[in-house]
Image (cartoon, rainbow, N blue to C red; front, side):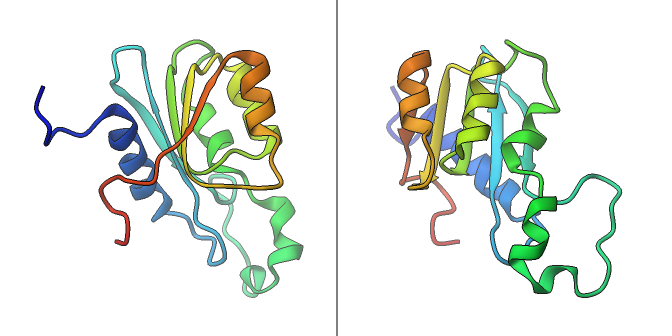
Length: 144
């Protein structure tokens, strides 16, 4: 095995990181990526507003006020595939409770994340549903 070759978790996490760079949110940039059962890319997504919505001037100034309008990267990602199509998901931040529930409903088997999210019940949900949930901190683009 080639030791220079990225592992699947590193590969999908690097894709998620690149996707995060597209987020228009000045406070929090989150990216996600999905692979199918052959480790082919299904898609990438990031947190942001619904497609086609142009935020008015001053929208981004108040994080708390605009937060309820933001779509999470995982939700945007799930819009790109059908249940059972994605085997592996990576997200730059551990999924929140609602996103973890959604990923489980979509039949995702492995979820990788870079940053912890203490307010999430993702670990408990993963355990109940038998989903692999693992932190990946070493991947290309770290410190980019």
